[in-house]
Length: 272
Length: 357
Image (cartoon, rainbow over all chains, first blue to last red; front, side, top):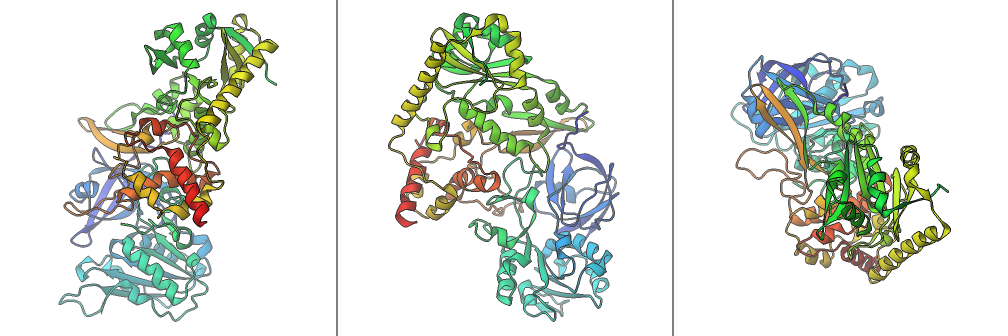
């Protein structure tokens, strides 16, 4: 029988973990293992409702199951958020290029997440933590709208080491918050390591990505050092259905993480 | 040079019935209107008239890429629609030069990395293409302005050239050679006069195209010129005539975008379907957002949708694959209720670029 790339692989929803009032992490086991690189995405099917694209937040070295962290924000995610352990889902993929981890070897990394944008970056962090000798210093900078919307709070302390620093800020503090206040780009202004041999990797809302890019340029990064997880409507997953382009790039096959240098000249790159 | 054979008008349908394909679809002229029709269901005169008319309104795309189709079944639903698509064979008859070039473009999009669209791949592999020269150009045709010919040069298995009393047939592939061999008893060697008649017909069409497009001038390099004109006033004038009907992308032989959607098909059974979509439609590039909010859409305003069609065809495509996303067939102008003519838009790009470039 011919291989039909449009048919989802059946998958079991093993566990639902609430992360914030609007975000949950779903642990999913597909019937056939799906090998993905950090940053590659899958199309998650909610049966009868439709598909939506997500980059797994779990380690790429585990193929039998994956974790997907999802913000409740539309038709598919609304239904997904109401599902419970044992439900049936579908998966297609992986799609996209993933983070250029080979190119990043031997370099320092600045990892900038905004809100649920930390989720895809966590698969990269897993990869880096599993291969610490391949990378230099890692600075994780994370921002969320308010303290209750911070993801993976239990992991923050575990991430920090001689190699890895972690800094966090919120836009709007509450009575529980005694940390930094302000947008995540405030965290990007001084680094105690060489930014010449460094890549910036960022995921978050488009407006944030734009200011991450501009701030990094101000600080002295070059456009080709900045990788952004761009947001577009990705549907088929392999460059056929047409809607996810930024200029000549199709995010589903050429991204979704793209070098700022490749998109900066297209006027709708950061349009929302 | 591949050998040219003559098929008389009254034996044409016999030849076409020898072309492999369970479904044999031709663009026919019936009571003054044209349609894609099964050869067996049409009158021989209607088939012949279809091959002598100007290019049809709907291109071969509408035969090779269904307007909508089920592409997967899952849950308790049984069977795979790909199996059916992989078995179906088809002959597409009367494919014009522009459409044959459009197939080269669709092949590039649909068959190339990172993986092929399995439905297109199966249909394309199982289709036999019978091309035809344009003995007549439509008023809106402008393939000559893109440096192309009004007869098929690539992607045909057999090509037909209408002349007096019959057509000249030429094989363009091994599959076509087999058809010609099987039809040997219907065919005779083309005479020198018949070949000269074909060349004269091609020349007449070329002259018609040159004459009807004499007032238009395209930029030499679209990638260089188009991006520099995006703020010019003429875009706003053209935009004022666009009602976002999506007709231009529907009749375009190269536009391929589709929308995927899932639906229930029984208890615990589901199917995934797709339908032609258009970059001109509201919602085309819209992403998810909470109910009651303005959802993110990188091409929200009408102008960004309108210009995207031109940017994709004349700016991004040359960068991606080295060819334009347009073959100059003019179907978009024929269908546009606002009378937007791509020739006029591109000529204005040329004028403004020359003025400021």
